[in-house]
Image 1 (tube, one colour):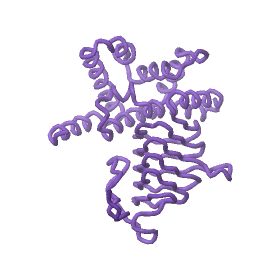
Image 2: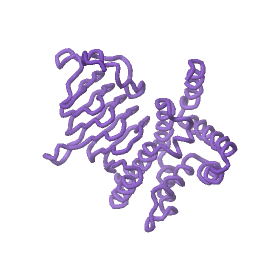
Image 3: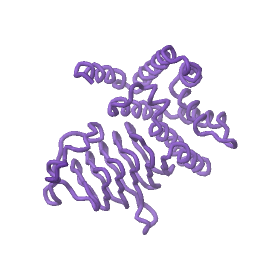
Image 4: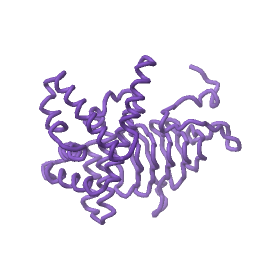
Length: 294
């Protein structure tokens, strides 16, 4: 993408996503409707789908609830029931709606393959899985555990993302590609975290109780990384693809390998200044990690 075009895109997204939560929700929803109308004009085969899923709705919450209800329904779990469940939950909790907008902005800003907000809303299964999980988590906290667990099962079946409804997840989350992501019951994920496919935040299999990882704000977790046990991944840390992490990782450091080691060594690990969960920088540590060059 040319520099001028990239700068214009970033500036436009900044205007859409910043400001008060209500203002950001309104701006993003307006952008989604405009995108859907343009897509319907350019691709008539999608016009009915885009109208029924986006254009006909009066709010982002209604559109998202309708879409999730149709995605997650089954022959015995009706889309109309799910629509009411999702809409009532989103409508009653402004923090859930703010998290949805933050997640849309995260995908649009961080993923160069995300061509529009509407594309993310309709097609990004990581985004959809997180939104459905937020509702399941709310139901879990209300002690409606059977339906929360049923939602977990449907999310896993449809999106190949398995998140226990008790897991606590922040906002501004990007599950890029998302297939095979597993997040355990007592896991905590902070704000502005990005993780790729086949990431596991699991237990060790030896203990009960609080047994899953705690992920700080701004963390980036590469594809296929496995983090096990009640360990703390500090704010702004980076976990390399394919790594197996069994201990705490200090803030603003990079852990790579199986078992994972800190870039720069345990005593004086290399510290970075960017926020990996936002910059999506997966490989800048290579020069400090290995002399091996392909």
